[in-house]
Image (cartoon, rainbow, N blue to C red; front, top):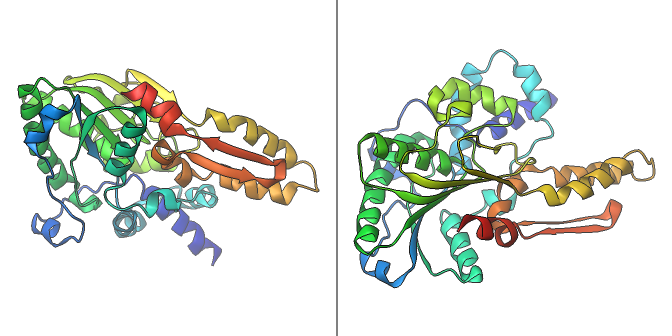
Length: 322
């Protein structure tokens, strides 16, 4: 029973960054229940100071299915070691996995309003099904070109804000447009929780199997049509990491270091060992950190009587991104 549970942990962890090599048939996008449409009103552009396009991450149910279909066939060497390492890793925080498909645009609109930014948010929606990645990139490439043309005509800058697998999609779309000689230009590209440079060895090795070398790891480059690339990451979000190609990297979870140190010390006191272990599991939940860029991180640790409130959207993302 334990081996089944640990393998399930590996599958769920790997689902956060998987992209398949085999594209789905175009008609599958129509059949998918997720809404895929281009909600852009060109007449709105003159009324705003800038346009921000958003690209979301994967839907976890679809991602998990894709992993189950592939990983059991491909992951052979190091499978047991991966299962052991993944046993304590979870990816089920309601802050991310239960979000609707509009989670990123909704969050960004709230962040912009609180910061007093008058920007038009244009979601570049896709099914969030990893089987549809290739089709999504084709759609988004066309939509982004339309947004840019209208924004340029109105002398408005275009920014891109993406999360998780959405960061991979938008970077590849922009690189493709640049290679084609397209006039599209993004003044600011903001990536949060990006798996472009995976920090966890399980994710890294799987990405090495599934992705072209230029699309992940140290070989990832900044698209020529991007002005400033700002990347936000968390050490406790194992999907994310610093990206050398980005102009600026901000680590958002430094505010949790003190509480983690106190909890690590508390583990040595037999009166608090069990409680400290539970609190550390909560503190290190990478699913919670993977969504912290737009909902923050708020947890109470009873062992050390500490309330940790990190308003990451307001204190880190907004002042350093836009």
